[in-house]
Image (cartoon, rainbow, N blue to C red; front, side, top):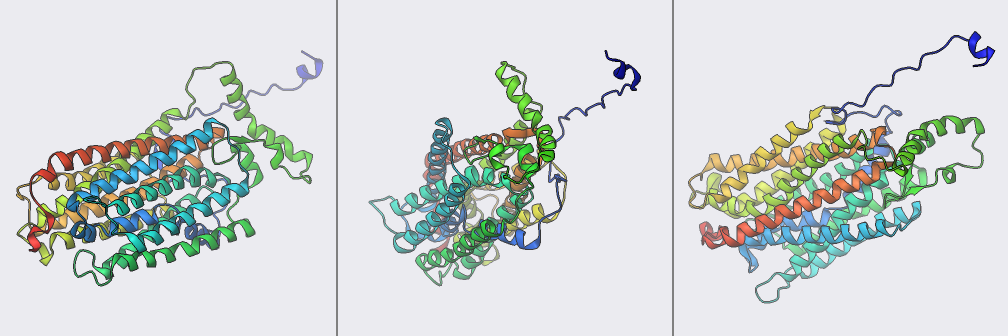
Length: 477
């Protein structure tokens, strides 16, 4: 020890707080990294979400009350559409996984072009639906199932590409982007309410799909504004501390992101902030087998996300037509036929989804993960139980109101939980360079769980419900 070190007072290192297992198990935790973006930035990211993702899939399912009256599959068509949608999602995610395995690198421009391609693919799906939705081969609704497949692929790419794409923007804008999708769903539900697909059907599904394509126009314009005016971008320090990634989860060299005018005295704090990532890489190289501290939180969030989506999007769409039929059979609660009740439940659920997403953006509410999952599971169980009531023991106005309310609450909670999960990951710096990989792992697990739920529902429909001889249109004859 030198003389200077003996003369100087010895400073004890400040104790570092240990990561808590409960950290990240509460949704909607603020990042505290910088001031909230402007209202114009929120509006731009919300507009991008309008035509990006599940727009075409939402439009198809809003026409299910009409489809089951005109298509050969009848009430079972909802389960077949759910299976086709999830099959398309899995195919798209397989392509993303292959690109990741073979280390396909992309530039920021290519990422933005990919988002534009997703919007154009949504337009193509809706345009084809407006022209040939009723094209059948034998006893199979080939056009509707093919459109469901393509819509599922687009929706899965939205989660697998757009979520990591958001890592170079403020985490709170994830809620704004997902809110745009739910606004589009609410607008589609409003249009369907005016059309009355479960009743008189004032205009045909072809015109309905054509009108839905208009919702994609603001998305392309908003993406152009985000790129031109650099809206919502994180400061350079924040980007480097979390590391930069392309949409396949591959790291970009941090030095390439530094401009030629960057001062040298700025490099020290940047290097210090990137030190945990370097240490993590060294530990991995040494073959360390200890799980990172964020792993339990990521697993808990992943289970929550997968189970939520499996119940809401894998099981409910397939059993909801039968639940509506059993509740309204011979009773006509509130003067509604089974088709009208199905349409009302679906429209109300999309409005619930919009309210939940709005709360995720506007309200800083701490919701325990497992409490949120329990509430969603409870509300998703009601349509399932009513669908199994093949003898109509729980029919009447009370059962109809319970069905509509449960669908609305389940979708509303899902609309709050999903953006909150991704925002919790994006704002938690303990994930470091693993953020995009964690997000993609969540999407893949969710798609696998939703596909499993859809397959089980399809088996239930074909092996049991469809053999009971209860046709939803029987009470309308």
